[in-house]
Image 1 (cartoon, rainbow, N blue to C red):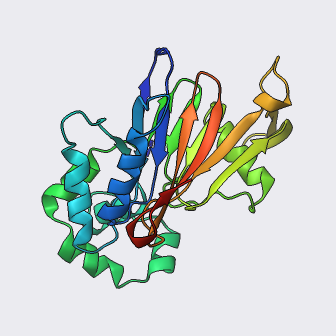
Image 2: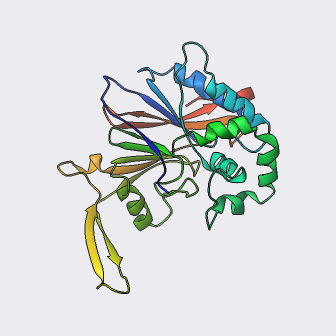
Image 3: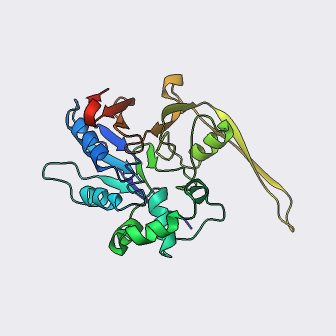
Length: 263
Protein backbone atom coordinates (compact mmCIF):
# COMPACT_ATOMS: atom_id res chain seq x y z
CA UNK A 1 0.00 0.00 0.00
CA UNK A 2 1.31 3.44 -0.93
CA UNK A 3 1.72 5.70 2.10
CA UNK A 4 0.24 9.21 1.76
CA UNK A 5 2.78 12.02 1.56
CA UNK A 6 1.84 15.66 1.87
CA UNK A 7 3.15 17.64 -1.11
CA UNK A 8 3.32 21.39 -1.29
CA UNK A 9 4.85 23.80 -3.73
CA UNK A 10 5.99 27.38 -3.81
CA UNK A 11 9.15 29.00 -2.55
CA UNK A 12 8.72 31.50 0.26
CA UNK A 13 11.16 34.31 0.85
CA UNK A 14 13.63 33.54 3.64
CA UNK A 15 12.40 30.22 4.98
CA UNK A 16 13.72 28.68 8.17
CA UNK A 17 12.48 25.23 9.20
CA UNK A 18 12.62 23.64 12.63
CA UNK A 19 12.57 19.84 12.26
CA UNK A 20 12.16 17.61 15.29
CA UNK A 21 11.30 14.02 16.12
CA UNK A 22 10.98 11.70 19.07
CA UNK A 23 9.26 13.78 21.75
CA UNK A 24 8.27 10.41 23.28
CA UNK A 25 5.90 11.77 25.90
CA UNK A 26 8.39 14.31 27.27
CA UNK A 27 6.36 17.52 27.43
CA UNK A 28 9.07 19.46 29.31
CA UNK A 29 11.55 18.72 26.52
CA UNK A 30 9.08 19.82 23.85
CA UNK A 31 8.39 23.09 25.69
CA UNK A 32 12.13 23.73 25.96
CA UNK A 33 12.55 23.21 22.21
CA UNK A 34 9.64 25.55 21.44
CA UNK A 35 11.27 28.18 23.63
CA UNK A 36 14.56 27.76 21.77
CA UNK A 37 12.76 27.99 18.42
CA UNK A 38 11.26 31.35 19.43
CA UNK A 39 14.78 32.71 20.03
CA UNK A 40 16.06 31.94 16.54
CA UNK A 41 17.24 34.55 14.06
CA UNK A 42 16.23 34.45 11.29
CA UNK A 43 12.76 33.61 12.51
CA UNK A 44 11.56 30.02 12.15
CA UNK A 45 8.77 29.95 9.56
CA UNK A 46 7.79 26.25 9.59
CA UNK A 47 7.70 23.59 12.30
CA UNK A 48 7.87 19.90 11.33
CA UNK A 49 7.49 17.01 13.79
CA UNK A 50 8.58 13.70 12.31
CA UNK A 51 6.66 11.30 14.51
CA UNK A 52 7.14 9.47 17.84
CA UNK A 53 5.09 11.94 19.86
CA UNK A 54 4.21 9.30 22.47
CA UNK A 55 5.98 6.61 24.48
CA UNK A 56 3.21 4.20 25.45
CA UNK A 57 2.51 5.94 28.77
CA UNK A 58 -0.23 8.43 29.76
CA UNK A 59 2.36 11.22 29.51
CA UNK A 60 2.15 10.98 25.73
CA UNK A 61 -1.46 12.19 25.75
CA UNK A 62 -0.42 15.58 27.14
CA UNK A 63 2.14 15.94 24.35
CA UNK A 64 -0.46 15.12 21.70
CA UNK A 65 -2.87 17.69 23.14
CA UNK A 66 -0.14 20.34 23.26
CA UNK A 67 0.75 19.70 19.62
CA UNK A 68 -2.85 19.65 18.43
CA UNK A 69 -3.68 22.90 20.24
CA UNK A 70 -0.76 25.34 19.91
CA UNK A 71 -0.92 28.56 21.88
CA UNK A 72 -1.83 31.87 20.28
CA UNK A 73 1.00 33.17 18.11
CA UNK A 74 2.80 29.81 17.93
CA UNK A 75 3.60 27.97 14.73
CA UNK A 76 1.14 25.24 13.78
CA UNK A 77 3.13 21.98 13.79
CA UNK A 78 3.08 19.83 10.67
CA UNK A 79 3.14 16.27 11.96
CA UNK A 80 3.75 12.92 10.28
CA UNK A 81 3.56 9.38 11.68
CA UNK A 82 6.36 7.73 13.61
CA UNK A 83 6.89 4.17 14.76
CA UNK A 84 4.90 4.67 17.99
CA UNK A 85 1.92 6.11 16.10
CA UNK A 86 2.02 3.39 13.45
CA UNK A 87 2.12 0.71 16.14
CA UNK A 88 -0.95 2.29 17.75
CA UNK A 89 -2.78 1.93 14.45
CA UNK A 90 -1.71 -1.71 14.19
CA UNK A 91 -2.94 -2.43 17.73
CA UNK A 92 -6.35 -1.00 16.86
CA UNK A 93 -6.56 -2.84 13.56
CA UNK A 94 -6.20 0.34 11.49
CA UNK A 95 -2.91 -0.63 9.83
CA UNK A 96 -1.33 -3.88 8.69
CA UNK A 97 1.29 -5.60 10.83
CA UNK A 98 4.58 -5.86 8.89
CA UNK A 99 6.06 -9.30 8.48
CA UNK A 100 9.24 -8.16 10.21
CA UNK A 101 8.61 -5.54 12.90
CA UNK A 102 11.86 -4.23 14.46
CA UNK A 103 9.84 -1.93 16.73
CA UNK A 104 8.37 -4.87 18.67
CA UNK A 105 11.76 -6.57 18.82
CA UNK A 106 13.19 -3.40 20.34
CA UNK A 107 10.34 -2.56 22.76
CA UNK A 108 8.95 -6.00 23.57
CA UNK A 109 5.45 -7.41 23.20
CA UNK A 110 4.25 -5.87 26.49
CA UNK A 111 4.14 -2.49 24.75
CA UNK A 112 1.01 -3.57 22.86
CA UNK A 113 -1.11 -3.64 26.03
CA UNK A 114 0.29 -0.27 27.10
CA UNK A 115 -0.71 1.30 23.80
CA UNK A 116 -4.18 -0.22 24.06
CA UNK A 117 -4.67 0.93 27.66
CA UNK A 118 -3.07 4.39 27.58
CA UNK A 119 -3.77 5.86 24.13
CA UNK A 120 -7.41 7.00 23.73
CA UNK A 121 -9.31 5.87 20.65
CA UNK A 122 -9.87 9.48 19.58
CA UNK A 123 -6.10 10.06 19.59
CA UNK A 124 -5.58 6.91 17.52
CA UNK A 125 -8.11 8.21 15.00
CA UNK A 126 -6.06 11.42 14.75
CA UNK A 127 -2.92 9.33 14.18
CA UNK A 128 -4.70 7.60 11.29
CA UNK A 129 -5.07 10.97 9.52
CA UNK A 130 -1.37 11.82 9.70
CA UNK A 131 0.73 11.65 6.54
CA UNK A 132 3.66 9.29 6.03
CA UNK A 133 5.89 12.30 5.30
CA UNK A 134 6.17 15.71 3.69
CA UNK A 135 7.56 16.58 0.25
CA UNK A 136 8.66 20.22 0.35
CA UNK A 137 10.65 21.80 -2.50
CA UNK A 138 13.45 19.25 -3.14
CA UNK A 139 13.22 17.80 0.38
CA UNK A 140 11.45 14.77 1.85
CA UNK A 141 10.77 14.80 5.60
CA UNK A 142 9.70 11.56 7.32
CA UNK A 143 10.28 9.45 10.40
CA UNK A 144 12.00 6.26 9.27
CA UNK A 145 12.87 5.88 5.61
CA UNK A 146 11.16 6.13 2.24
CA UNK A 147 10.33 2.43 2.68
CA UNK A 148 8.72 2.30 6.14
CA UNK A 149 8.42 4.21 9.43
CA UNK A 150 10.10 1.27 11.19
CA UNK A 151 13.40 1.43 9.30
CA UNK A 152 16.31 3.24 10.95
CA UNK A 153 18.76 5.16 8.76
CA UNK A 154 22.19 5.92 10.21
CA UNK A 155 25.61 6.67 8.69
CA UNK A 156 26.75 3.22 9.85
CA UNK A 157 24.51 1.13 7.62
CA UNK A 158 25.37 0.07 4.08
CA UNK A 159 25.88 2.98 1.67
CA UNK A 160 23.93 0.95 -0.90
CA UNK A 161 20.88 0.97 1.40
CA UNK A 162 21.16 4.73 1.93
CA UNK A 163 21.57 5.21 -1.80
CA UNK A 164 18.48 3.13 -2.48
CA UNK A 165 16.32 4.90 0.10
CA UNK A 166 17.23 8.30 -1.29
CA UNK A 167 16.82 7.30 -4.92
CA UNK A 168 13.28 6.08 -4.23
CA UNK A 169 12.19 9.59 -3.25
CA UNK A 170 13.46 11.62 -6.18
CA UNK A 171 14.45 14.22 -3.58
CA UNK A 172 17.80 15.84 -2.96
CA UNK A 173 17.39 16.13 0.82
CA UNK A 174 15.99 13.37 3.04
CA UNK A 175 15.33 14.32 6.69
CA UNK A 176 14.59 11.45 9.09
CA UNK A 177 14.18 10.99 12.84
CA UNK A 178 13.98 7.28 13.63
CA UNK A 179 17.60 6.87 14.77
CA UNK A 180 17.45 9.74 17.27
CA UNK A 181 20.88 10.84 16.04
CA UNK A 182 21.95 14.11 14.46
CA UNK A 183 23.99 13.49 11.33
CA UNK A 184 24.50 14.76 7.79
CA UNK A 185 25.39 12.05 5.28
CA UNK A 186 26.46 13.04 1.78
CA UNK A 187 25.39 10.67 -1.00
CA UNK A 188 27.88 10.76 -3.85
CA UNK A 189 27.24 9.60 -7.38
CA UNK A 190 26.65 5.88 -7.75
CA UNK A 191 24.81 3.34 -9.83
CA UNK A 192 22.08 0.88 -8.86
CA UNK A 193 21.07 -2.14 -10.91
CA UNK A 194 17.53 -3.55 -10.85
CA UNK A 195 16.83 -7.03 -12.22
CA UNK A 196 13.42 -8.65 -12.71
CA UNK A 197 13.05 -12.34 -13.52
CA UNK A 198 9.73 -14.10 -14.17
CA UNK A 199 8.84 -17.61 -15.28
CA UNK A 200 7.67 -16.65 -18.77
CA UNK A 201 9.89 -13.71 -19.77
CA UNK A 202 13.64 -13.21 -20.14
CA UNK A 203 15.57 -11.50 -17.38
CA UNK A 204 15.22 -7.72 -17.56
CA UNK A 205 17.84 -5.39 -16.10
CA UNK A 206 17.89 -1.64 -15.66
CA UNK A 207 20.77 0.53 -14.48
CA UNK A 208 20.33 4.05 -13.19
CA UNK A 209 22.57 6.68 -11.68
CA UNK A 210 21.81 8.52 -8.44
CA UNK A 211 23.78 10.92 -6.31
CA UNK A 212 25.09 14.40 -7.03
CA UNK A 213 22.71 16.77 -8.72
CA UNK A 214 23.63 17.57 -12.32
CA UNK A 215 25.47 20.84 -12.71
CA UNK A 216 26.38 21.20 -9.02
CA UNK A 217 29.57 20.85 -7.05
CA UNK A 218 30.26 18.40 -4.21
CA UNK A 219 29.00 20.85 -1.60
CA UNK A 220 25.54 20.54 -3.12
CA UNK A 221 25.48 16.74 -3.22
CA UNK A 222 22.34 14.95 -2.09
CA UNK A 223 22.04 14.50 1.65
CA UNK A 224 20.41 12.30 4.27
CA UNK A 225 20.01 14.22 7.54
CA UNK A 226 19.24 12.77 10.96
CA UNK A 227 17.30 15.43 12.85
CA UNK A 228 17.92 14.25 16.44
CA UNK A 229 15.60 13.32 19.30
CA UNK A 230 13.70 15.65 21.62
CA UNK A 231 12.56 13.56 24.55
CA UNK A 232 14.64 10.39 24.96
CA UNK A 233 17.60 11.76 26.95
CA UNK A 234 16.58 13.53 30.19
CA UNK A 235 17.38 17.25 30.28
CA UNK A 236 18.81 17.25 26.74
CA UNK A 237 16.84 17.69 23.51
CA UNK A 238 18.26 17.79 20.01
CA UNK A 239 16.61 19.06 16.85
CA UNK A 240 17.52 20.57 13.47
CA UNK A 241 17.22 23.95 11.80
CA UNK A 242 17.25 24.02 8.01
CA UNK A 243 17.19 26.97 5.63
CA UNK A 244 16.12 26.00 2.09
CA UNK A 245 17.29 29.40 0.85
CA UNK A 246 20.98 28.73 1.54
CA UNK A 247 20.84 24.95 2.21
CA UNK A 248 22.23 25.41 5.72
CA UNK A 249 21.74 22.61 8.28
CA UNK A 250 22.23 23.47 11.97
CA UNK A 251 21.93 20.94 14.78
CA UNK A 252 20.64 22.38 18.06
CA UNK A 253 21.06 20.94 21.55
CA UNK A 254 18.72 22.31 24.21
CA UNK A 255 19.46 21.63 27.85
CA UNK A 256 16.58 22.15 30.21
CA UNK A 257 15.74 21.54 33.85
CA UNK A 258 18.38 22.09 36.53
CA UNK A 259 21.24 22.38 34.01
CA UNK A 260 19.46 24.45 31.37
CA UNK A 261 21.31 25.94 28.45
CA UNK A 262 21.37 26.11 24.67
CA UNK A 263 23.92 25.19 22.06
